[in-house]
Image 1 (tube, rainbow, N blue to C red):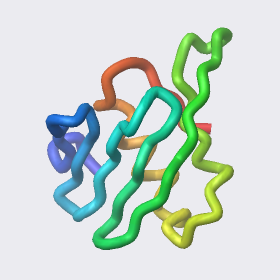
Image 2: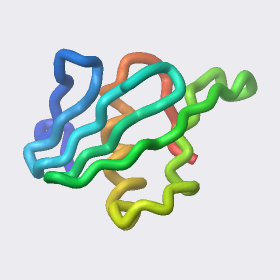
Image 3: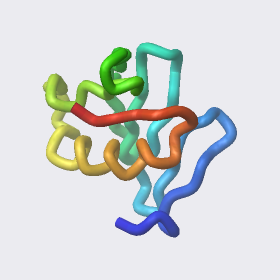
Image 4: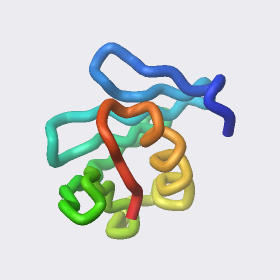
Length: 85
């Protein structure tokens, strides 16, 4: 996926031309949506990395196969420093 296929949206999240989006619900939670399906993803803070950590590996959602890749792409456009773990 290229950056040109992604865009920031008004809620601080990221939307893809492929139909998925990441919304920042609060400092501890993201919502990942793909078509009509959605799942919640936890966020923590790592002082060592000075970054918000997106816990994609803990997902039990049926959306998981693409979740990690999409979150890694979106994290570059989210406001602040995010890493996917």
